[in-house]
Length: 49
Image 1: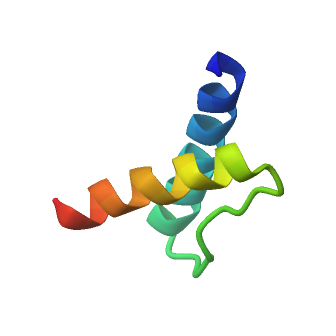
Image 2: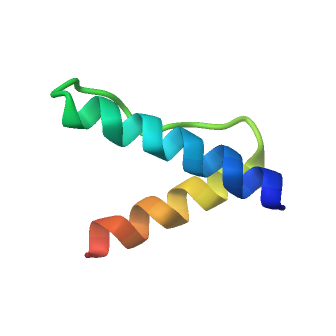
């Protein structure tokens, strides 16, 4: 599970760095269901803030 968290964190970090540069980019996607659920949950929490 730690590897999944590290992977998702790296993907989200890269995503938000691109957004900060003004680039339009879709949210990261993963072919792994566990990783995709984790990405979705983190994005939902960020969106609620």
